[in-house]
Length: 403
Image (cartoon, rainbow, N blue to C red; front, side, top):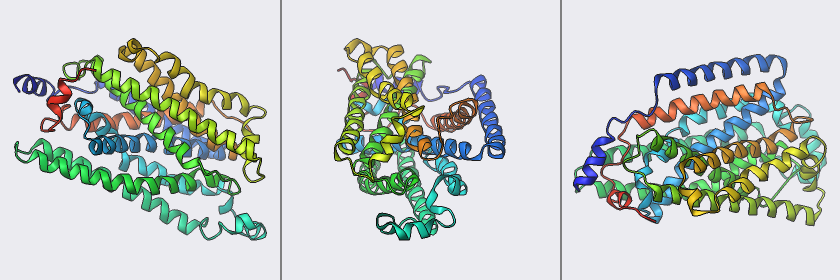
């Protein structure tokens, strides 16, 4: 116990960001806001696409932190406890990420054709669209959006409160908070399975109301969790390199994170290929237009690049045990996967709205602005609690972890 106490005390006031990093992040936020303001004036459709892509993507990273925590609590996993504060920091961003996502509502006419005047008459003339009319209407869409974001935020707040309360508990009370977090995690997993599937249908699939895919919810979940693991891995590597987690996180923890990143890149690729092959083989008129657009003209290079970044690069780079335990290699693979995750969302959204890829300075500045805001909020969360969850009953196991 003396070793655990020493490691805990050494991380009580560990800095997680510098003044320089804070200044850079604030500058990125300001430049991103300026790009949005100017873009809405001169090229509104393009900017609304970027806002949907970034809003959905960064919300997905926050939800991935919440989901990661939930499955680890339910599995009674012990190895991850030393890095628990990192997914907690992502989880605490759910309410923050919900606000930019709500802003997409104001660009609904540029994004969703079924919200435009006159489209209800078109829906009434096509049986496949008429069947969706009761679901795809603006008031119900807004109610669902607020409900999904609100429910996710409540779970994130409750889990964070229980985690912080556990820090202040005496030895005999820490198990009570742990059991509470397990119960909250069980409830969240059930709710998340339904709400995230519906949110994916609402925010992404309904960009083309004629299109349908039975694998779409699994595909979006695979992208969410893969990008989330990459974000957690990158933050852990950065904190360990900076000394904040060097005393608690060893090669075995990195190895396990590397295995997760490697495994879920394969899972994502499996779902991506399955969806493509099922639609190609079925050759149904309501399904194939989605891939016809994305595999022709200027969209084709992007379509090919997405699986390269999300699967091929991490698969080849992380094959060996040594690579998974090397912070530089692991961090580099995580960066590639994060870029691939953003492109994956862009490849879903943009072809439904724009005639061709528009990847330029505007996209870079807006995404950088979101990343800056994400960084400020995440580091603030990390700085509000000790980097080691001192009263977690699995902490001793995690600090002795060897794989």
